[in-house]
Amino acid sequence: MAPTSTPQTPFGRVLTAMVTPFTADGALDLDGAQHLAAHLVEAGNDGLVVNGTTGESPTTSDVEKEQLVRAVLEAVGDRAFVVAGVGTNDTRHTLELARQAERAGAHGLLAVTPYYNKPPREGLYRHFTAVADATGLPVMLYDIPGRSGVPIETETLVRLAEHPRIVANKDAKGDLGAASWAMSRSGLAWYSGDDMLNLPLLSVGAVGFVSVVGHLVSPELRALLEAYLSGDTHKATEIHQKLLPVFTGVFRTQGVITTKAALGLQGLPAGPLRLPLVELDEAATAQLKQDLAAGGVQL
Image 1 (spheres, rainbow, N blue to C red):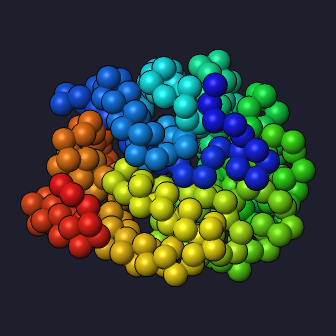
Image 2 (cartoon, helix red, strand yellow):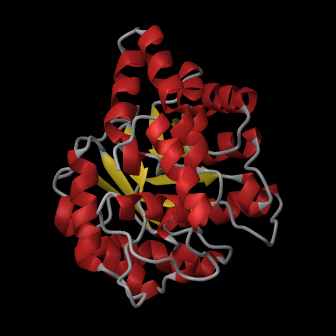
């Protein structure tokens, strides 16, 4: 069984939104995914999100998504939460992915705001409610208006929190005031979806992180969290400030691109990217090495 879920921490506290490793010819690398998943759990993650944006979900097939969930569950499902990204901008397709993830054995679902078609509040409410109704799995919403084009407004979050299976929100809205109000009124378990705001979001009530830089600094993220929870905010701030070059470096361009480059430099499974994403050029790779070194990451 996966770690014990509680209402306060339904998916644990430290999760990494995992890249999807590919082979040199661009095929799904299931052995690499299992190796990377085990590495991340051993580095201190309570859970992994697969088939999210960092997993290049826009360019993986439904069959590949199911294969990846099953492979990661086989590798780490007895010691970590495996949360399957199922969000699309087509509710029917999202429901198919949700049921597929449940059949594969996922412990929970991550559902991003439908992107590009910019649904109104009622559309968002009905979409997320349909996802939660489709399976028996707990759902983490994913609010990222910079990608989706529309925010999940506080009133909508409060309505959605009434559903017994909508238990958490991954917040990449970048609005601490809105987050504060939504947390206090909805009671949802709040996870930072923006690494630069991991510590600030803890200070207003978040319970943990769904991180991209967790690929590289999971022990440090765990230490930051534990310092904060123990009341040592000075130490937590020190760790946060030490990691600033990592946060900055990984997001100088699209995070999957830099993360796969860094994993490759460390000899970990990652492989190429699928178009329209492209590899870092020589100058950007040199900058990434400099950023990571400044944050204490060994390459």
